[in-house]
Length: 103
Image (cartoon, rainbow, N blue to C red):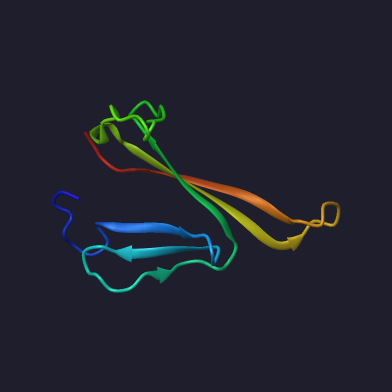
């Protein structure tokens, strides 16, 4: 985390698969994991990107964390509404990018 020592600078955001929620933990202040969503979250995925927005393969041991300039958060939401045709909940994918470094 480098010099990230203040509250909300070093956090863990996770998907609680059992509860279908997103949780938040501030690693600098300690405390307990807090639920931040309703129970409609089916998946949470982070995509790490270089300055040219190309994807960094995090499974590649040669990948350099210093190359990460953007993080895209992708959240799949399962609605409470049931689709009449399929009998299944409808799903929506939301995504947002955050610039993590300026160079």
